[in-house]
Image (cartoon, rainbow, N blue to C red; front, side, top):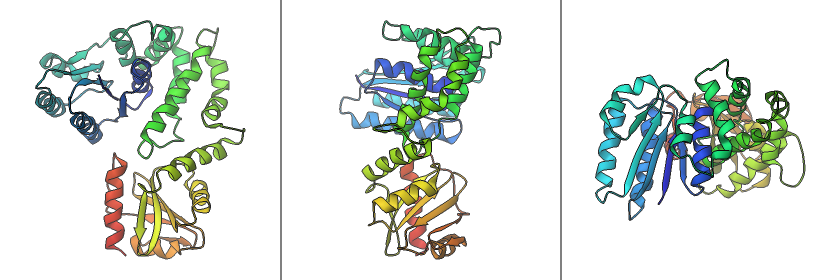
Length: 339
């Protein structure tokens, strides 16, 4: 059975997936924030299900309450795909705004008294995840704000650790992003049984981050992240290639330290002429290594500017994208029109 799990983009949402990934390590995991992204991610999973000739599996949604339109659409599409009765749909949530949907759909489970992590833990309770009980309680305490709970302070540190684990962009590298956040949760486990364990865990967060990226030797976090992202970009360079006139470039979306990473990529891949990183606000940065005047390029495509090897600007026509493929398609068309 194939397992598909859509969850929210916060501590509660990622911890739900941390639990289920223990049970279904080969599952398909994606995350969504509220708004338009929810339907984008639902459709992403539905397309994955359609690729399965058997169209069987378990489609789980956690820590996301659906609007009436989203719930109706999902119910209809799953019914269409589930003619053989081998596809299970289940939603586990705790937000009051989903009450009407919970009363209408049997697959919509709502419990207002617990975090989604606690609901998920109880739903799947088995020997494989019993050892995560204190982690679950810490997340539950901070997510529904139980200030008197002995694990509340630990939950606060966890919340910040997950919120600040942004070194791997979740749109450009979604699976790497999830793995990184799950790593941070795993790093917290030894401290949960310590008295005042939230303090030593807080002390070691920086080292915990670095341990995810270290391979052969220690270095600064910036350098370790650069090496990690550079390896991902090199592996995916063909899928991420774009063109401007006769020049070949690579496109990223919302990555941190784009100047450092861009320069490192261009040095390692001299057949590429420019590196372009776009943010969700439509601003972009361009880097080159003496093979293209990116200041002139920025001026031509968006009235931007800068230096021959480092420039930027803003795309007025830009809209927010929730998948890299949609972004790349937009940018290819945009650059072609302005070549």
